[in-house]
Length: 255
Image (cartoon, rainbow, N blue to C red):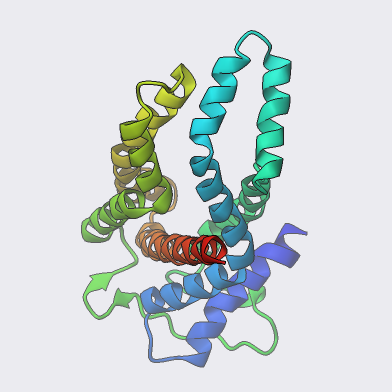
């Protein structure tokens, strides 16, 4: 089932792009392929991002509920769920996206590993031809080996994605205005958010330059391109959805 419905379609999708556009290299193909996959997952991503934005908006109310019902966790949980319901928040929507993305991510690693240095014809559909794999990204970087530049770029892009994400900016506002009255869990979440801003970029660099190459040496540079493209697309999604949400709220307030 995994090969039939996940790995094989993804493999043929990437190879099909190179078959359709034979003049591009594997790096450009991965960028195009990543954007297509992200567009397909956009409805789920939109729901998850909206949930994050709305949950940040009610953090102050949640802190009050937790403080007021600190002695009764059961009532506290009921009140929190009532708050979510009144604001139209579905806190578990992100879990569905994670369950869908995780097998896709694992399949993509296999796809990238089994496409360099050559395509495996046994995985292809009958209507897709075997293209010639061009491994030099824009004629500059050999993608058959790990790349310090691409790994560093992945870490930098990850930093900017976290720094400029709407959820992080909302968290900054909360920590400035509510720090005095926030409970321990809220303060802890704020502290962890600030730490992740620096930890995740380091993890992105280390993963694509050391960890992944140790297991998938041929796929490391391609995964770095996929990671960077996916992160940039996610940031664009977040900014777009956040702006649309703000316009919607503003329109409601005016009317």
